[in-house]
Image (cartoon, rainbow, N blue to C red; front, side, top):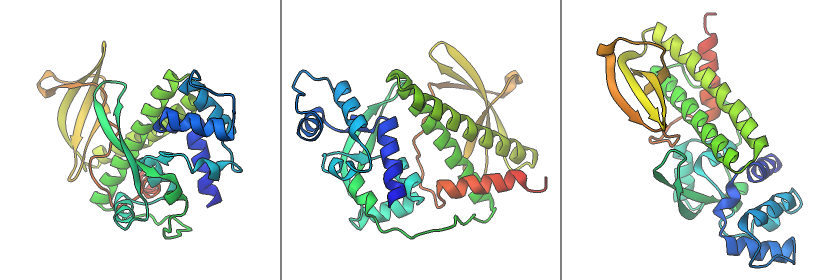
Length: 274
């Protein structure tokens, strides 16, 4: 449990999870446990900085009493090393509760609704203790699913980087950029190999428009998932149309394998027969 607590503390101190907490709840907590001099004029940004500074392993369990002190779905999947199916089952069995649902405006426009899950439930959740991540069989479905998970996780780090930049959290910007780049490199290496082995079928090229910026992306489909990869040039007859804005980081399908399994499977596939 101690390792999970440390990771949760890092998420809150280096990320934006405190934004889930309502300002009045955060103010009452800070006034009671951290700084009695705060008042109605203290901004939420100031309260968040006070909370981040005060949050550590000794104070962690006190922070658990704050309403909406929770985690997002992808954070839980990575923390516990479980799949969407397992998390949904734990929610259904009342092992992990949903504290609230929030609408989040993405940096490129549009809104998404996310559930905030109870941090306390996650900390004390009884999940299978897996001492070694088991690499799934290298089937077409597992390979494509692993690539999907790696790609979506890279985009989560992309979003975190952009949000952290807005909040001037430069440490988190650097960490998220490094993680995102590493995952994209992993994705591209696997994609190129799958293309060479004719596991994916080329469909054409999309033009992605983000503000005043234009990118061209080759579009490939497999038996179960589809993927984009940057391209430098293409034949006009292959043009498929435009994509407005960035491709979402939100997972739209449930997966049978976990993110740690996905990374190990992709690495094993890339290194196979080399």
